[in-house]
Image 1 (tube, one colour):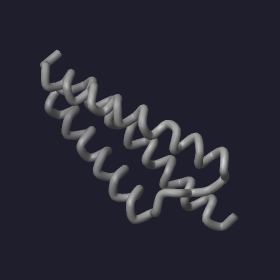
Image 2 (cartoon, one colour):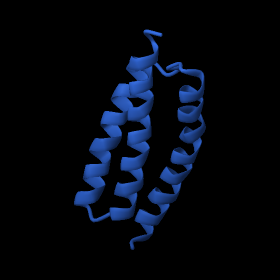
Image 3 (cartoon, one colour):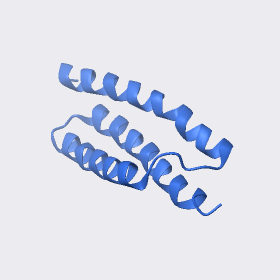
Image 4 (tube, one colour):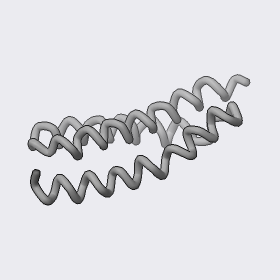
Amino acid sequence: MLWQDAVIMVANIIFFISLVPQVYYGFKEKKGFITLATSGPIFIGLYAISITFYTLNLYFSSVILFVTGTLWLVLFIQRLMYRRA
């Protein structure tokens, strides 16, 4: 493992952990608190960066960033689902 992979992975784990309460709160309150204009570009960008990391053989960073992007996708979906409620 490259040291850069470890640093990027640790930073993204912190981002992942910080998003978990927001996703949980959205499901609990049945509200989409994050706007589509925020969550949409972020999850698309994170997936693109994840693919880029994978092509650079930064596998751990790629996986963690993909998971973080998926949490942003969940926030995007929450906004779509709960704005009608």
